[in-house]
Length: 319
Image (tube, rainbow, N blue to C red; front, side):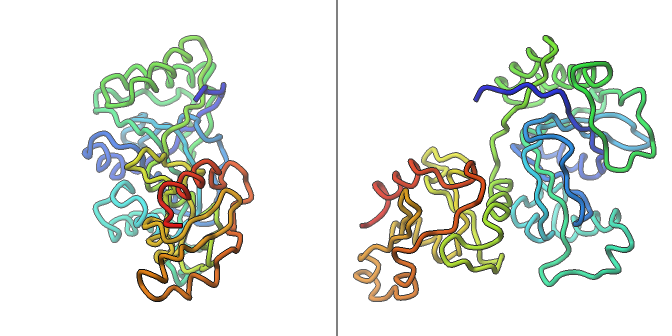
């Protein structure tokens, strides 16, 4: 994918324990850079922009970076269920305890929703974590009273320096060579770029929950614990982790879709195979949806790809 020119990145204040845990894991495809507030959006930079991990005092340095992928609000349990220890903690209890250290007292006083408190999920692709002796000096004009972080200009001054130094250090950090080469070349020419990081499984799931409004595309069920991110073409068979290759489905519908007993046409119509009744002498629950149009996201780039749907109908569906 050809990158587009971007002039801004974001420096985010980073929990040291989060950083240390993830660095010890070695190279990973994605992480959840959570923010403790469930009422604040993140719109500082567009998807694909560089996102830098700044460690607060006593370190006062940039210890790594990645590329902003998406932002969504989600229950803490869903963030854990989707990302696991890529939330920067060994288990859910540890993650929740760390988040609560940063939550504002008024948020705690409001109590929790039935599905748990809401956190902001700033999802970062292709994260790179530097060794201590590779940390990059923070901006000379950084103000210590900055709470969340701030945008920086990547084409001039301190922002350009930080981006260039981070890219130089990334050569030996397990980053994809093609990503580093493109970004480094652009930075040297004064043209920082948007990198389209590959969506990992965690980002894929939370993004689908957001795109489908937390409801099954077929049954419109809203109970999040039974909703799953379904690939149209399986990842193991070359299907990508992007929204055009996914649908949010109730778990039982997902299983039937993967087995080919149901499908969705290129016109977004749900179809049930006669084999379901023949093989299991049942299926009335699903036949009532036969011929109905599924719900699709409002944004066209987030809708299921028609070519991918046709692939499933032709190669998997037991029609």
